[in-house]
Length: 116
Image (cartoon, rainbow, N blue to C red; front, side):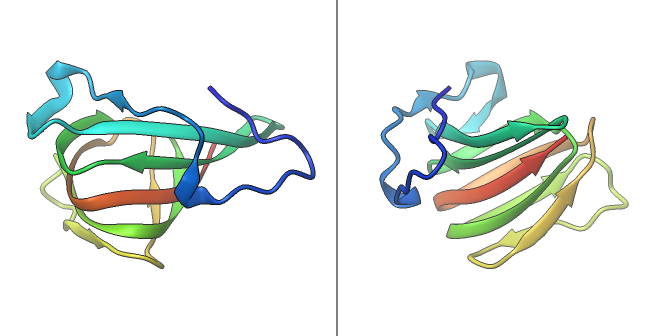
């Protein structure tokens, strides 16, 4: 994990953090990788920037709100009562802990997130 120092400025498109491959048991298609940088952590919440390269992967979510900065993806849910969400710059999404998701990323996705 990398943390942004107070008062520092960074370009979210040029994070100085290396991508790591998504674990094989979470990959459905392609060779997706992710990276993130935490911007702040206090009072039980974390704010950061996260990226996911092209490909399809699964995840189990935490309580989170995020805003998409860049990219093109579809977020699907194992719960058939929930409709898939098309993610593009400006999309704002709320996830609940325990949700099982499938991320289909067509163009590297970058988001700012708040968890906790």
